[in-house]
Image 1 (cartoon, rainbow, N blue to C red):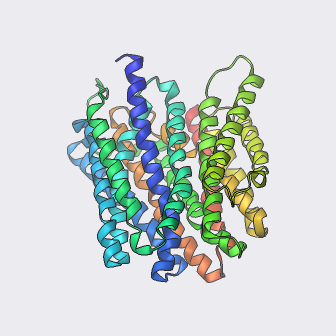
Image 2 (cartoon, rainbow, N blue to C red):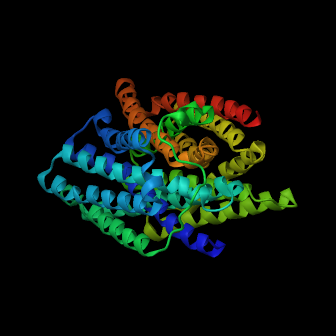
Image 3 (cartoon, one colour):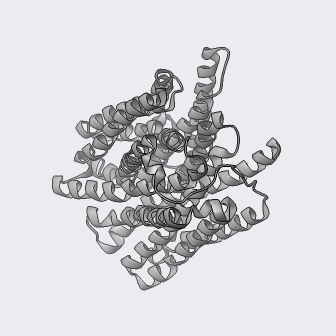
Length: 454
């Protein structure tokens, strides 16, 4: 297929990454709303993430069991049909929010989130490996980084737009309205994907059932790495609004959500930088200069959107310290030398330092360190994912199901952090949970780098 056709297909897939990024980050807005609506403890409110990300584990486990008995389903039905199935299932989960809201049943909200999570699981299994093969093997990490950047655009806009929408509704009885809108959007994207011609890939290797891929060391190390990465990322994002309101009593829920947008926006900035870092430049100074310009422009875009949405309460000058963390991020890319596993180790180390600082520093300073971890979470998913399935051949989708299953970390670590926060009297003291997860990622980066060198 021609490169222009690849570009059209890639653009269509990018829409998917944006959509599931938006719906995933809406959980961070939903948690404090449901906590207040049902008078939940910190740990109980985190069941939002347990059900959503737990669906990744259940869905991926079912997929894997099917793949080892009768063969890889995605390889049989094709990526397009797999993507459509994920979109329709996600739409059905959003629709469940209507009876959950009208009947005022927390368990039904959780059921809706579980179904949405199942749909996004199928999208993850199909779309992530599809992006890696939609072009040259050398550009796989770069394409995945760029796709994840648009995923982060969704996660960045969700706190801003979702928070405003819920605030304007004013009544928890109408909390289903944003999700009915998402239902329509999922159906619309499904229609577009059904119309757009997506290339199919044929591989001369024979697709086999069984568990042979479990012998791949890189995949096994990658599974635990995804578990730790997603768990750590969700811990910070899910606890941020409540943590900010504990650290700064006079901060409003909407203001905390505005800050949260810069946490997820940091992932977007870092992923754009990750895509640029893999491009060959004759002059390295020009390369890193361009990275800085792109980062500043993206940061400016985030500030502009926030100011347009909140002209009376948002002060752009207050966000200027974030530029210092962008400079640190670019320097970390230089230390990583565009080697995916090395970058993971370096970024994980920086995040450990930032989280430790947040635990021992109060007020707005702690918030800044928490926000900055988003920049360094940015390329971890794509670097781990692309490396883990690089040598799996026709079993890429099967390996992808195991990696998506490892998103279970997002279901287990946040409730654990919530229990710790309840026991210690606040989220501020509970960030050693993601610190432990990032510690493994340092080990992974070093170990996976050695395996690559063999």
